[in-house]
Image (cartoon, rainbow, N blue to C red; front, side, top):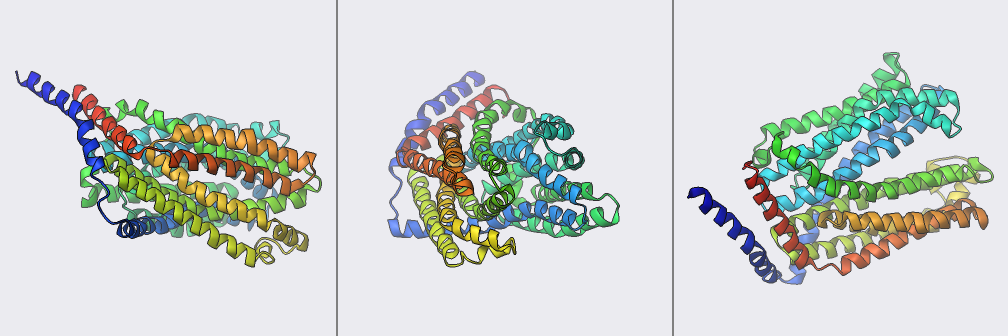
Length: 495
């Protein structure tokens, strides 16, 4: 009798959930638009600024290691590490970073719905899944030298790259866990632990890397091990915080059968999220390879590398704003507050446009000296100055695209985003880059113009998708998914 009564109650809960949430959604938005805007602006800004520190700190681990190897004075080792870093990013780190974006949907909406226990389950599911994804990547890295030599790379450099990648394998597994934990904290708006541990890990990385590269006799492979040690230090520090902080008491990460049963649902978002991220990242890596086929490849590749490095450093800002957007949108959709989600979208888009204007203005005013940050060669500096108008266009597209991509992750639109990025970059951007760079003989400018065109197409389509989104419907769908997960968990006897 008790079982049948409980089953009826659960079925009734499923039936009435959507109408109740719909009613709640209709009643949203009674606060004045101006006060709501300022409140949302404060929320997003308080998250975005620290997230810049987190992403920059993690990025600088690779930069510091490369700089240390450069000071060894062994050109083969330096070239091997440079190629290995790009190879590892394309085949490993970008995949994990993209797939971890699934948690921005799952954990964000679950947290908004106050289903705290499920947030921990999704995080443990992501850790298990991403570690499994690391296995085939590891096998690929073992054959790094053979893969590089297939593309006519120098054998000595290829062997140095292989040694670096093999010693980078611990970093790969650490990165898989770290990105899952980053999303765990991000979706709960718990920024301080991420900032503190990321900066602390970076500070510890410098002496660790110095010792392993110069004092231990390991040379360039010591730089790879140092990255792994630093990632795991970060992971352990965050793990201790989760274990002993009362702030995480409701969302403890538990490795249970429930986590394993969530793998299929995780992949539902992780695969399109990974493709969405990788399609964009890989197109820019392809751009550098194409520059090497141009006449005077030393100059063309150098200039394009400078421009790509500038846009990469800048992208940390819109990526951080996008992470804030993802958290705010997913939390509000999970809570059944479509008006608040829509308000968050407006705020982050305005921030993106303002940031694009400020950064573009900076580059225009200092276009004649930007190149000196990378080279003393006047030809390179002058070429970079001539590329600044295109650089400003790229920065503007990135600023808006970064925020809209965050909205897509928060709303669970990764599949749409993957198709958009595939079409924008590989049906428009790359073909146009080939046409302008080689056929029209515009060289590096032509390649850059092609990719910018792809970015603009991406921004336009994502903007249209975002503008046409029925947020009330998305909030109802998000809440219905959460109710269905609760019922599924109950039926499996895992409550």
